[in-house]
Image (cartoon, rainbow, N blue to C red; front, side, top):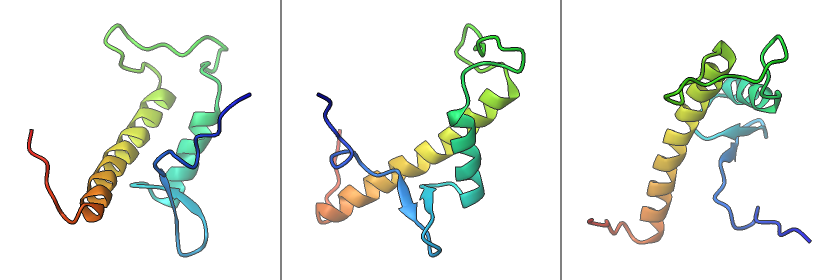
Length: 96
C-alpha cells in the first residue's frame, strides 16, 4: 500500500488566468519545456547514460537546461514558501 502525500506537500504549481498549471517562477513555455525535459530518460542521443562531471555539473546541453529551469523554479518556490509562511504567522520573522 502506498501513501499519497500530495495533500501534505507544498504546492509547486499555480493556475494561471487561462487555467493552466504553471511552475512557480517559470513562464508557461518554460514549464512545458521543463516538463518535457524532465520526462525524458536519462540517456543522451546515443543511448548512453547522461553524464555529470566529478563536481556534479551536467555535461549535456539538455541536462544543463533542465538544471537552469529547475534552479529558477526552486529559487522562486523557496521565496514563495517564505512569504506564504510569513503571512500565516502574522509576519513574524525567525532569527538564527
